[in-house]
Length: 356
Image (cartoon, rainbow, N blue to C red; front, side):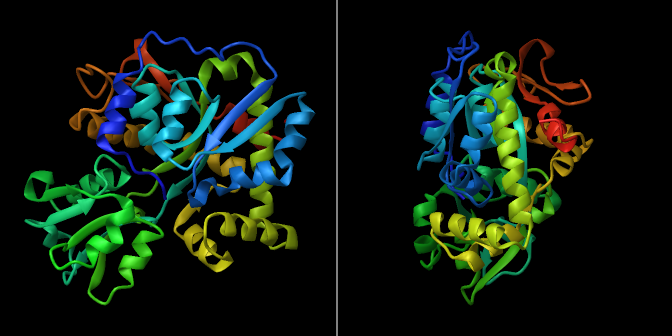
């Protein structure tokens, strides 16, 4: 899961985005670009481009939509925030901190999945989460791993002051764990599975313990979507056509997942194993129900407080409520005069109702 956020990159991204930014793409148009990076729940975007499913739906609405893979996750969000792309796959946390925190009005168009075990905490030669007290913990700082740690510590009445966090690249995590000095790591699949397979490794907490909090979403520019609703319809229509295939046992569905597996550097069995710890919303109804749940505002409050505590909720943010986040029932967490992140299930509802 390429969801790492290097501190310098993130702060530079947020601080460089003026709050008065006006998206250049906010106008009626026919050509669009969205970007994605490799992660189990985002592999469908590459397949949509390669298979022609996206083209079919774009043609239906007289549009041209290009789906571009970007190998650096943070860079993909930075480019979206700068207006280079009309949409980008990202987590709820990163959407709030980078584009929304930087003043770019962003809408959660497709709520695709949430991590349900893909992210976890591993201790060496210890079996209980409470044993993490006093240890040095290696993780990608200011990433969803850092958020997971904070939420996990809450469950055993500990906080970050009870341990020491060491920023460690995801590329170095497996090698770091193999050294005697490293006794605790927080990471994501496939790294998590590789480390957990070590004889002295014990997974003491994972994202299944905070279901629905690490959410993977196709975010789009709100103004662009408002001026070009067919753009949203085409993306949503293509997505759920592929979700139906993936959820089936058909030869076409297996072929699609096999292609996604190979594109992500694994085989079908490996990809299925990653899907098993990912709560995919294969139907638009499931995605809509999740987006309308009473738990989502609570989750975003947790996320905002974490980001504010780490100093990455937008330039000069005076409180966790600096950025407004709106929900389907019309409620807003944060500043109602600065709503920059919107959970709007209307396009997913069109798909659920068969009206695309």
